[in-house]
Length: 410
Picture 1 (cartoon, rainbow, N blue to C red):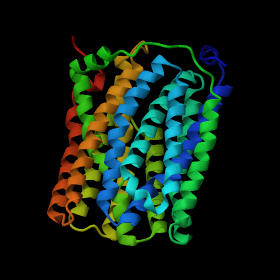
Picture 2 (cartoon, rainbow, N blue to C red):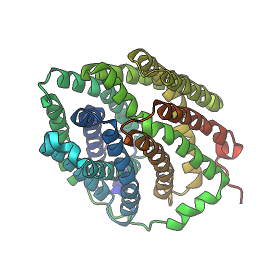
Picture 3 (cartoon, helix red, strand yellow):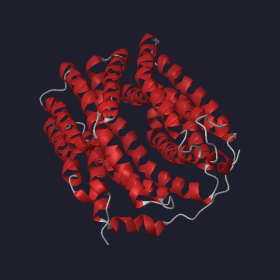
Picture 4 (cartoon, helix red, strand yellow):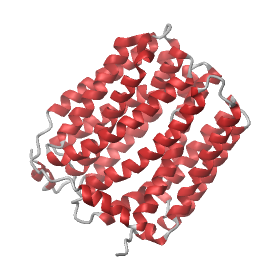
């Protein structure tokens, strides 16, 4: 079915191409949520070096940027499905090589990081673009609801199941089983992506417009907020879980920790979506940021199981308080700056560049700390303090009326 035919649907039923895209998204979500947090733990167990894990994430974030930009260009110059196919192929190869290298995987941490980052960059921009192209106003909420519900469910259950499988496995056999399941799911996802129809709605990529948007003060402030939030999020997305494993030495406990924190987030997201008010958007964000800061502040004293547990509870509550209104504000601004849909991809790429700058900066600083075998605990504490302080700055940038209204005075 052509894209134009999809757009002409008037009922809430999902046409065949949209069902295929939903299937791809669900399979990828399950595959990633089964394996993602344990890839880092796997590399740590192989080397007993946090620096190796940090390097993998640094290379992954660096590779993500050019892949995301190129995928954005590709999505407008050729069939939009090509980016999805390329991303799926890279993710498939990543898990293939993880299984092939086995306990020698840490030797190829740079190559694996490049594959994982490139695959993620291609996949995420492609699936976001296609999610808009393959839906319309009548069925978009239904599509996003199904996708979001399964994503949340797999994010809760995936690490719990994987942690248990790895814990009962002998040596690294549990890891290979989990990665093998993800590999199999990506094979199915890749095959389905090949069946998507080729669209013919090609358009130029507006490089000048992507750069020109930064002349607007509201977009610049929003970009600073993206960078600051990603500076914090890029690090805590993996280092907290490594610390949990270090103090528990138990993959099942790590899966339980992730399940607890994600379940709390799922509940808060539901409450916010059901009862949250747009009038209190900035208040929610400030409350969430303060709670995240307090959760991280406890780790300044000691990285113990008790304090990590407190962090897991507080972060599960506070991250949705900040992220949900922040993402809404970001999407509203993208919509305001692109009223006719001409530059939607370019604006998404511009946002991703800002996010990537924040992630790469913080992970690089953490890598420098762990590069020294005798890393100073005070350096790590100063780094945590910097994460707390910089993580609070989005509230400063976003309090401007220009950002709230998405305005761009000429």
